[in-house]
Amino acid sequence: MFDALSLDIADQLMLGIPSDAISVNGTTVDTERALAVLADLHRRQRIRSARSSASQVHTLWMAGVRRTLLRSCRQVATVESIGRDEFYCHHYQQNSPVFIQNIAHSVEDTFRWSFDDIRRAFGDIIVRVQRERADLAEDPKYQGRSVAIKLESFIDEVVNGSSRDVYMTPAGGAIDGRLREALDEFHPLREIIDTGWSPGNCVMWMGPAGALTGLHYDLANVMIIPLIGRKRILLISPDEQRFVYQANGRPLSGANMMAPDYTLFPLLRFATPREVTVVPGSALFVPVGWWHAVESLDPTFSITARGFFATNDFGAPCHMD
Ligand SMILES: O=C(O)CCC(=O)C(=O)O
Image (cartoon, rainbow, N blue to C red):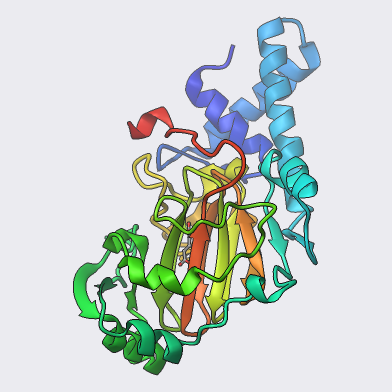
């Protein structure tokens, strides 16, 4: 039997990580030890006598296979449009992301408000936005300092782009229900998501070009739907969890995936990010557990929907309790 440390080292070797880059619990393992584990692994593969070691070898072999296949698939599946069966059978139930290029088949599928329209209709409402979010290392959730502001003043900042370090996110608390009125006539993807835009199944984001959401995963399946402006999104498979520097067991990474620092976070080099740019009229399905980071390429207003016609309540991993 491998001890836990050796198993961890062997696992990383099988995933293709060079022996001098292997680390366990953030500490680099010396190369000698890693190579000894590799030699032992090969010996065990040849002998295949003890059933327990054979099953461990199988697990490690399978991890290597998954890794190889993952690397050969750098793209997110992309479809022009998608029906209910295809979405739920091939994506939702397979935990597999999909980029839907065209959600707008009728007037009701199209969000028709501009920032000017929103400012005119809802400019007087007070929203909570975050400032000073730049220091990702100290604030991986990008919470920043939350301030209350009139929506019209905030939209001016968003559109003028005076700072990229400001964002209206769900972390600021519930958005005034009146802003949700803008969504009333908007019913995209009716076969796939429940389009009642209640706070429980839809959250809102508004920010300037350059606004960032750091690398994280959600505890539920989500559909990211841009309403105004483009967003660049990087996705990393849950299979590559070990490369993303999860912050203390929370669903957040300390690394900035949009500008990776490989000196500080060397294992990031082994992750295989898949990139998608979403534009209004398209949507990206991000399955539960998939790591993702989001950057606004323009002033943006978007929603994240969670109201699927299938179970979407998975609790939290026990280490987060
Ligand atoms: O749009 C964003 O900035 C973040 C969206 C996102 O990551 C989410 O809803 O989980």
